Length: 215
Ligand SMILES: C[S@@+](CC[C@H](N)C(=O)[O-])C[C@H]1O[C@@H](n2cnc3c(N)ncnc32)[C@H](O)[C@@H]1O
Image (cartoon, rainbow, N blue to C red; front, top):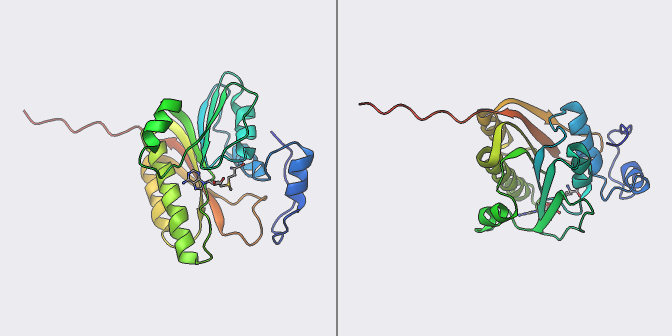
């Protein structure tokens, strides 16, 4: 885990406080501070847990997640961009597109679950057209939610980054349908003008038992 961030709401500057801090602390990306803050607020990851990190390149989140679960745990990270390998054998990475038709099969080859947490920091390539970018972001978040529901254990946690706007409220309701508690986090390391927010689902509900068949 890393120290508590202390600067809020600064305008976007490529080499800002968090960029420099990440470099000093040997972190691959400033985004590491975001998942660190989320885990400090909601400590849902225990030693030995298994976690799926979607949109994991270059690996800032992975560094924090690996630290949180330790060598008795397992971290799977995927991205469309290659991730520089980790020295820890319990961190596995692969180049995969979560929206590809064969993604689920490929993920099962890597690790078939179940997961204690599914975390997504995925962000689409932005077009500059707000509604298009919101819709793309939502599509990625919905895929992450689908994976959390199908591959998460009962009690598992879910985190997904999403651009605010559009169907944000609908998405929050979709998370609420499968998780006992839903929180919104805008980490301090989020750039000032950014529209992004993290939706956190705590304690995945057990799937409903099938209704008894009438005799
Ligand atoms: C903000 S970056 C993630 C940073 C990462 N969490 C870290 O801490 O190093 C967003 C990532 O989402 C990935 N991404 C976007 N669309 C994706 C997709 N369809 N499948 C997998 N990854 C995707 C991008 O390639 C990019 O690396």
